[in-house]
Structure formats: structure tokens, C-alpha cells
Image 1 (cartoon, rainbow, N blue to C red):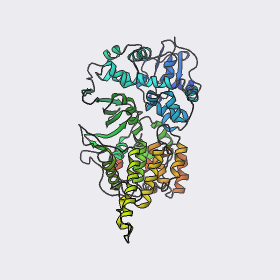
Image 2: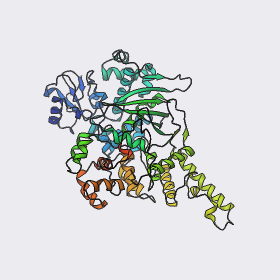
Image 3: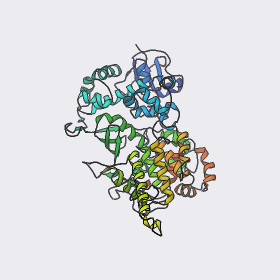
Image 4: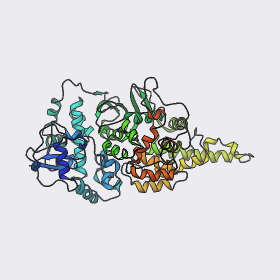
Length: 553
């Protein structure tokens, strides 16, 4: 029987009740309402008749409601709500833990692995999560597995065994028991209930050949969403071979815990179409989570736009393009390396450097549906490549020791630890090598569970990492919604055109009113300028711009 004890002391019961009575979709994912008279839990916007106030119990997560004995509503499907924006804009241990759980750490490494990445004991992690979310890490991971399994049951023809494996269950029995407990239905019943007019979206590849699977899922988001700068930025800065715009979708390769994936993301009016080609079906949930993070789909645009629109200079921009998102990344280490390669050069030059790095060190793959050719290099491979370049430089300097000009004896792109083919200035080579070394040693932690302040301090200690690079990494790799680039030329020019202060110090003082959403203000300031990063790619202009530019976006 469901418990009637208060679910969470962190939720305002009156505010939650008003949201339920008004069926306010803005709160979907922020909390869940459980109904003691029916034993089910719903999203706030459930179309069913609102329950009586005395029968409502409010939970911060689906796992908390499930742990209290409530089953998911079959009408509003609360498990399919967008994720809470709390986990992406907070840096405390609970938010870090939630990001790691979404990335599948508990399924792969268990609670000890989660605790190890957070730097806490397993007991401390359990206590923190249970106190705020009403459920521990195992229950939260179990809720995610149930959601993934339901998605596969209703949209694919994968066998029950493959669904259980893809969702992260260790056995068919655990899979069956969980589905019955959460949804009050056997897996086979859930599959029979799917809409017969909707064909399965999965195309299995014979497992004897590759073990791969291709399927299409819908990624929900909180409306509104303005896709132009989101997809425009990703495509304008796309690394050839790793990313491309094809047939109205942004496509890219991605390393996964058990292999790799190719994802195609297509903006649609009420969701993002997501086509996935996975070498291992167990990577489904982590890949979906990374795609959501890349496109900032769990953001709360109402809160962001409301704060920024209070500034008269930004209000017209917010009105013209509500729901701007921050383009982020599927691989924080990749973004950090690309930020260094992009220091003080045009977008075209940064893409050229990145493409050469991918060709030299990346892993070749085969793309059946497009022109993608490589995975972005692993940090370990980059570190090994740098070490090889340094050994080669030493050998060449020794061989040409009698030369009167040693600088001419060694090609510029191969000095001071630069990988072959990268013609970088000496200072940039040192920064590149220091960053890769810090990432390889673990001194710099950019992953989902990293401590933002500690990471900022470690990055700032590296040679050549200034405010622009640091804030770029914080905004797009760490996901800090308050990262700000007052010294960026594009930001300063955009601010000047709006009549805002154009010097970094004065702009920073003015931008204090935009906190904690300054990263979103950066997107609006960049949008004042005419550049492909601000425009949705079209068939007439499908790819990255080739024109050089001054702004470092």
C-alpha cells in the first residue's frame, strides 16, 4: 500500500497543489504528484481530473514516488517528463550524483563507483540523496531503467532479453518484477498497448555481424525552445568527420561505455527527433542523457527568460527568440581541447586544427547513413601522441645538433609536444600539452560528477588558460548556467550595439542582474551579430561557414 507520509520537506505543498490544479506543464519534471486514493503518481499537467488536496503527496523524483509504493499513471506517463533542470545548473553533491546516475554510472559501477567519483563514502551519498530526493542511488537508477525499458517496449520490436539488457537490468526476473511494480503491467502487456498505427522505430542489425542496433526516439523538452542558435552553433563549428549537418539533422559520433554511437538530432515543433545507431544496446540510456545535455533540453526557459527580460536591453531579444538554449557537448574533454585549439583564431581555423587532430589520432569508424569517419580522440591517445611527438623532437634535435639553426631543423608543428600536423604557436602547444596531461592524470575532472570550483581552479593553474577559455569550458563542458565571457569580442560588440557597457569590467557589473543565467545572456548577445552560428542551417546553406571571422564564439 502507498504510504501517506510527507514525501519531501523541500517542496512547497501549496505551490505544487496550485500547479496540479491548473495542469501547469512548466512544472513537469520538477516534481511528481502521488494520489493516495488511487495509488498512482502523475506529472503536474496530467489531463485527468485533479485529486482532492488531502489525497496529494508531492515527490521530487519518480524514484521517490515509486519507493513510496505508487505506480506510474498510464495516461500522462510521468516517467517520460523532461528531466529536472536542477541537476544541470547546480554543482552540489546531489546534482553531481544525479548527472552521474543519468550517465549510467550506477548500472556500470554500482553505488561504490558512484561514491568514488563523487569523493564521498557510499553511506554519505545515500544519506544526501535520500534527504533531498526521497530515494537513494539504487532506487533512482532503478527508476531510470524502468523508463528506458518502457520506451523500448513501446517503440521497438527488440526481444524482451534485449530490452532488459539495454535498460540496464541484470536479469529478466528483475526486469519483469520492476515493470510490474512501477507500471502495474507485465512487459508483454506494455508492448501490446502501444499504438498500432506507429511502426516500430528499431532496425536491428544481425548480432552475429556487429551487435549493433538502430532506433529512433523522441526527446521531450520544456517549451519554448528556439533551435536556431542551438543547431546553428553546433553545425558552424562542426569538426569534419566527427560532426555534420545532413538532411535536416545534426549528426555526430560519440564514444560510449561499451563502444560508440552515431546520433542524428532533428528539431521538430514539440520534440527533438533522435536517431541512434549503437554498437551496443546497453549504451542507450547514457547516450540519450548525453544528447539531452548537448541540447540543454532540461533547461527551464520560463525562469531564464523571465530573469533576462527584466533588463530593458535584453527584453526585445528574449521576446523575439524565447527559449534560447546553451549548446553544450557530449564529451567535456573534447570541448576543452577544442576550446584551446580555438584560442585567438577564426572558427574556420579552429575546425581545421580539430580535423587534423581527428585524422591523426581519432578512431576510424564506418557510417552507413552519412559522411562521418572518426571518433574524437581519447585523452589517453592524445597523451601518447604528445609523448611521441616530444621523443621525435628530441631525436631530431640530436640528429641535427650541429645545425646552426636548430629551429629550422624541426618542423614548427612538431615542437613542444604538439601532435603532428598541428601548426600551433609555441604558447598554444604548451597549453595543449598541459591540458591533455591534466586530463590524463585526473588532476582536471570535467565529467558529470566533477566539482565545478575545483575544476575551475585546476584549469586556471594551467599555462595559457585565461578567462575566455576557462568560461567557455565552464559554460559548455561543465554546464554552468552562470558562466560569462565579458572579454569575448562577440559579446562586447553585441553589448555595444544594445547600448550596454562594452568594457569587460563594466559589462560584468551590469550582468550581475542576469545571474544565475548569464550563459543564456551570452547567447542573446552573440545573436545580435550576423553569423552562421545564429542561424538554422538550410538546404541552401547546409554546412559550416567558410568565411573567416573576428569574433571567437
